Image (cartoon, rainbow, N blue to C red):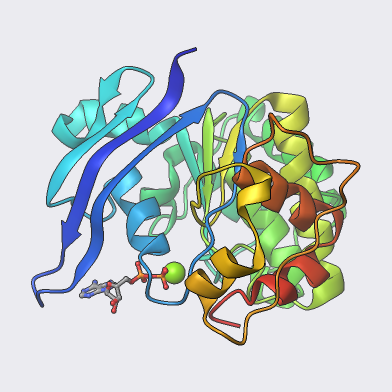
Length: 268
Ligand code: ADP
Ligand code: MG
């Protein structure tokens, strides 16, 4: 099966000399929900940002639907970026602007969306914005200012904005780390639903590649240190064909609070 995303021998060395990504290779199939786990500073954000080149990789390749993102320039890079949605931990909304405008900005792609408030949207775009806000349950907040919303509601605007791109791949960098446990749960549910219903591949945090039975206490302690507690994954839902990442995602989707706490996710 062709991977939607193929990361090949990716290396990122920052000018400071920090080797944030050290020869990482990873294939992500269509429709997968992949969760990257790793200590704070282990390179999760760098990896996600190298995928859409918000961070320039030092070497290696990122192949998205057959196109080498690492070689793309100008218009080609913009076209590829439009097919990849991104959701940020801090939401990155234009705070003093309406929820509707923030959502509409997704039409431009997240990069310009961060800086731009668009002028006159088309009727179709407005209809699409309302539909996407409806999907995440906040259509009634369309005319509220973004900064008048709760954290969970703001993140839902972030999701609606990303959906405006009709992305084939959604990158989410600690999308619930700023939220309280109950709110985290509902935001993860929306991401799960997008993944299942739209078939959008969701790449959250981390990669830890292997079968679920490889997630044993020893492996977790290797990743998180001696104080880590292994995540509990309901045995009935975990099959041999399920990857560790899928199992972790499932655990997060089932009970994001517990799973996140047990995984000892960083930056909280
Ligand atoms: P994570 O998201 O897993 O916490 P990051 O990708 O943010 O990890 O960071 C990985 C490493 O790269 C860390 O050592 C961090 O300090 C370093 N790093 C991240 N961004 C930059 C940057 N823009 N310039 C220099 N070093 C960076
Ligand atoms: Mg990070």
